Image 1 (cartoon, rainbow, N blue to C red):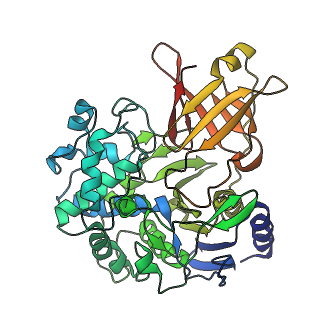
Image 2: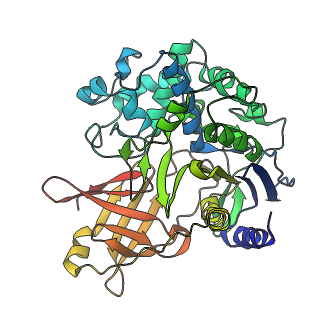
Image 3: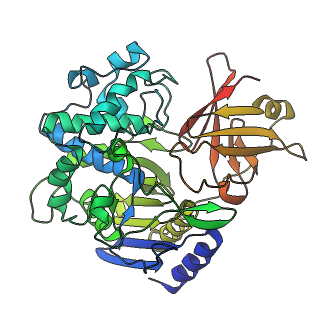
Length: 448
C-alpha cells in the first residue's frame, strides 16, 4: 500500500480508537492487501490479510446472491408473495403480510419494524421461530411506500432459502456460494472462527476502546449480519460480482443479467442513494458505486465496488467507530485509483420557524434522536442508544452534534462521532412532520 495511505490509517486508528484494520483493493486486475494493529486489546495478535472479522450487514448481499441463484433455478420469484413459500408468514398488519413480495424484502421496502434481534437459540429452528414471532412486528410505514432499512426482512429471506433448499441457511450458503468461490475460511459463528485468527469487537467507553461482549449476533440474525470473513475472501467475493457470473473454475453461478439486476436501482433509498437487490447504489462524479456496509458488535466494515471501472475495496475494522475510519479510507481510494472526488454539499439557511417545527424527540428500536435548539439558534442532534443486544460494557452515547441544513428537510451532523451522519425529515400527506430518517432507520416523532 502507498505510504500516504499508511499515514492516513495510523492517524485515523488513533483518532477514532480502532485497534485493528484490514484493507483489500482490486484495481486493474491487481490485488493489494494491507493490515494494521491488533485483533484484540486483551489478547493481541497482529491483524493480517486472513484475519476473520464479522462482516455484519455485508452479509445481506451474500444472502441476496444466494436468493438470485435460487431465482435462476425457478425455486424463488422476486415478484411472488412471501406467502407462496411461507404460508405461515404473519405481521401485525395482515394486509401488508398478505401482499409483501420478495422484491419488498430485497429492497427494504416492506415497511414493518426492521430491527428485531430476539435470540431464538442456537438450534436449526432459530430462523423458523424468528419468522413466527414476526406476527408481533408493527407496520411503521405503508408497504412499498417509504424505504427504511429492514434486518427482519432479510431474516425472512434466510428462512426462504432454508425452505426451498431443505437445508439450513448456513449449509445452503456454503454449498451455493462459499465453496464455489473458494471462500473456505468464511463461516457463520464463533465455532467456525475460533480455529483461525479472528478479530474481537471493541466498543468506545469514555473515549477508550474496550473488548465488547457478546461476540456475535444471535443465530436467527445470521442471514442479516452473521457471516465471518477476511478481506482476502471478501475480495474473492467482489471479484465474482465484478465478473460474468462464473466461479474461478468456470462453472456458472449467475447470469450476467442477474448480476446487473442486483446493481440496478429498483427503489430510491435515503439521501442520494438507490437500492438494487440488497446492494446500495450511489453516483459520485461519473462513477456508479455498488456497496454495502456492516456494523456488528464493536466491528464495522464496508465492501465497495465500481463495476464499470473493475475496482473494489474492502475495509474491516474492529471498533464501534470503524465506520469513521473506513469512510476516510474509501474516499482516499476513490480519489487515488478512480480520480473521483466527492464534493462537499453546500449548507443552506432555513427560516427559524421551519427549524422550530423540527424540534422534538424521535424514537426507533435501536436509538432515540432528539433535535433541540442550540445556543446560537441552530439545531443540535443528540443520539441515545437502547443497547438491545445487551452489549457489555455498554458503549457511551456520542456527544451532541450541531447540524447544518442541506435543504429544508435534510441535514448533516458537523462534529464528533456523529460527523457526516445525514438526516431527512419525512412528512405525511398533510405536510406534518411524521418521521426522521437517519442511518437508514425511520424514527417516529414522539408527541410531547
